[in-house]
Image 1 (cartoon, rainbow, N blue to C red):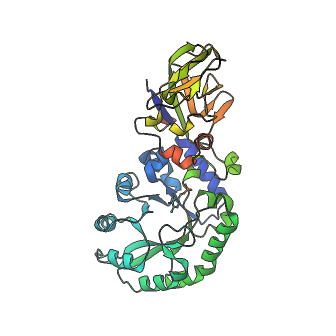
Image 2 (tube, rainbow, N blue to C red):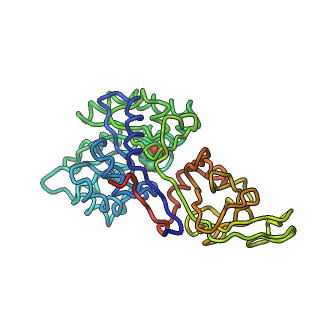
Length: 366
Ligand SMILES: *Cc1c(COP(=O)(O)O)cnc(C)c1O
């Protein structure tokens, strides 16, 4: 029996991708974003589930790309973050598509060219402010890259920093891409343009260009939340009740003694803590878990391996019972977004922080 485990519904991955596709032009390709072990869902398993419906995959770095290579031998793998100079040879040798931020970086890649031209994706910074050629310098930078015979520009991409929160700014970025798309296509015939992450696909599907890069939405979490009804959360996270005790009024609970019982209470201790990725920041919040289909509030500080919840209203709760941290139980439901709100963070962080000590179970088991 696992102390804490996640259950991954691979069939929902396909359902979510299909839902995203339903809003996109039929000739638009999908780059499924599998960085950080597919947002904690298991990169190899997710790639296997999505390979027939994805034109390509994307990861953060060379080592993640190498992990995927065997699972999807006939699909392009994009590396979304910059590779350090010592990695570039291996990026080229394995045929991964690196994200390049300047003509200088493209020139560095060019030295690894063999008989084939090296395919790169050029990032344009239209407001993300992380990597890429600043938009005002894009034309000059791209012209310089076009003079490198060893380089083939596979795609030109930009990224939305606020696709779920700032439609006006996002629209400006997408309009900029639109306005320059003819010039880009003229400079690099056959080049593919892409801009949309999950929020972009949900909010601005008419700016799909040639490819889209969904991450979070594949895993069934919608940001902005108003689109949640369209998606099915892929991951559930569970633990067990490992101890039940009756505790008198006035007793201190857990580290720091931040919670004092205000009445005779029945408390259950759960087999999950912050070392599993259950956020310490849930301590003192309005967080709850589901046991027997009931909401049971978290009390006191989350500890490394154990969490305490109040089950005073549910006297039949016993050691061994299943606890839902994220997912559904009877009529109740907790999403990664709920946990993120309680912990003052974002669902991407909640999912990617689930530790590898938490066992991953893939469903349905065929
Ligand atoms: C992570 C990432 C994505 C996917 O983002 P989601 O918001 O999870 O859909 C897309 N593009 C780039 C460049 C990324 O880094």
